[in-house]
Image 1 (cartoon, rainbow, N blue to C red):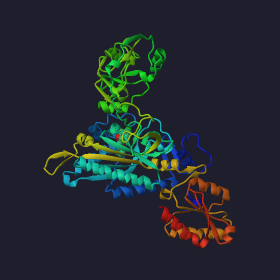
Image 2: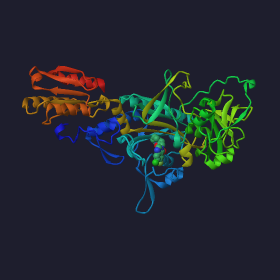
Image 3: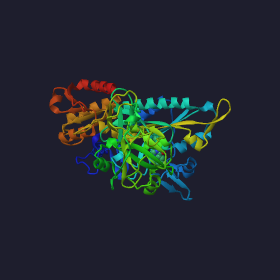
Image 4: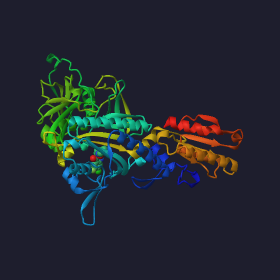
Length: 570
Ligand code: 9G3
């Protein structure tokens, strides 16, 4: 491509509303432009990268045995009513009506559509397993789109859906997708980690997120310093501590203390001059509208995702003040395990605690020297708290680290959630009707590109890996008024194009400095600078964008040199 003919509006100034480097650089490098909040256009340079990422995805999806389809973006409400999700989602689901006043949504995902397609066409186990994928635009009406295309409202996603006859088949489909994702993100030149994740509202039993390590990432993760355990912060498990034998003789007598208007853990700690680790917090929740008391050590925090998954409830929120009063007999701030009118569960942090402080379930009173067993019963201990960097790996007990990441992919075991809701059944080899076992697998295409920039940039601009670079080589003749120089550059350009190399020729009538700045900004991995002096010696200068390494190569050898480098780096 000739730069002088390309729609490539680079710019020097940094846009004010761009908070992350990938958003800033994509705007400055003329890759994207905002149409409106959370909705972006891809310009030629940006779209070439998108197509490279999609190509890698297609190759690996096809290699894993998935088949490409293309599903409608506009989806009838009926399917979402059947799956029970029409009421479940709020304003994030963009809904609309057609001329006949029939209701639709703009697809934020395609479980309903694909399950409807498959249930109409698959009748027997002989037709399973099947894995269908598409690369398609999704719409999710995010309340606050940010970070350019990293959290946009309209975005390109590869979404795949597998259908199996049984759980073991579904395990195999999941494994194939998991491995394909590792290959895809490796080939895109990313450093990433698959982390155990929560399945959230999508249902199903298990899932992994693929996080690209970047400080600008919105997702927190923990990973083990020695084994390959890694988990999303919300999901990270905590090992159950060893129970130390506690002898009842160590229990001190209960002591009720007047603590006027002393409610929070910090206030109790200061008033009674005890550490927060010697206090137990009693939180009252409403789980599917029934109250439950959850106890945790004063210096820890409850992880509500873990609590919701442990209780298996649909709705979970902190109880209202009235319910707290009803259940504890006191206003908020004085709740405790002794004499409470609800079941009690406790986080592992209470194991091995003794003679601790708790609310007295009486206004303006707390109790000292509480002990589990003697003074109150706990229904169960569970892993309910947010992981801390001082926790140990639940698999191998080694120290763990925290990191931030950008979620570029997510693979889910769905089980029969959608096939049951939508009666996607098949006849097994005994002629019995069974529900198909599903999995679903997503990759954010634009987000993968943005994550690559987050990990590959410097103060001059983007540094593309060859695998998804918009062009392999940029030829920069320093002065196009020098006709001989320009014709040599064009000759090299034609020859490289002829050998399948993707070349951008900067034939603009611009000063060399401008050309070099643009070259570093748009991040083409290889730059061939042609100047009259070096050319008089029959040489050109080849510069590697990533390492900054500069090589002088004979003009006659540079074509083979470039073909070699591109073949090696691809
Ligand atoms: C909605 C809206 C937003 C959503 C969903 C539904 C996320 C929704 C989860 C998934 C799960 C997987 C297939 C590809 C991989 C991800 N946000 N999810 O279901 F109506 Cl408004 O999309 N789907």
